[in-house]
Length: 341
Image (cartoon, rainbow, N blue to C red; front, side, top):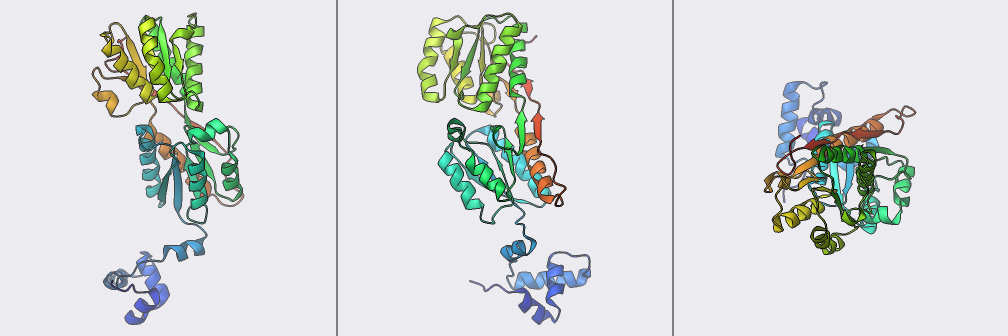
């Protein structure tokens, strides 16, 4: 393997100071263009690699953000991450990503692993198990160690930090209004995320819309579960034993399975049954019929989270901004599974 040169070796061979080499390699305006070119080309020839760890220790900052997401297969989290990475890179920050796989233990391990000087702060969405157990000690400990956190989508009111959320409750009310205005009366609620904060808020929006419009709640057409297995076992009975004209699904799995159950029974969509799903991955456009969805604007959420964290990291001591909860508005994207108003 080709040996790596040091700043001192480069300076000695070019007969310049170590400071000149360092500034030339970082494109400092203090160094003339010919000297920069000479130093940079020589450094490349000698296989020079900067010691980021040493620079970070000197600056007391790693310029790196730790991102922890619960589920890598969920298109929403992939979109959020794209927004985080784009904004972070534009502001000169790197991103390290860990997946909790909905596990409290893995979430704690990821935070412990990154809290050794590797990162300056966290952007994260709480795992399913963490929300279920109500265990938030690891978040508070990180913040006590001067590692700020920005939570997105799945958050905890018990942790005082910056947060980015979507208007889950209001978007559910808006979606239900669309059903009702298109003369739907028997609107089923389908959810496999009833143990998550976002699932609860969306369900509350569904119930609020029924109450405001004077529609009696029918518990027989409400299927709220905490797992896909339990949901799949109960879904068929709901369709077999009830006459539905609308389905409001609060997550990706419920959306797809609800549409699949209707198509299997020969129900015409949207003439006999309108469906709105709470997700907006690529699959929603490719289904037949295409699925109307509540779009959560994932890249915008990620960008806002990165911006909030970096602003806090770069604020002067004593001038840190107050903690903020930023709400990103959702959008109902109408496709073929709902009747036009």
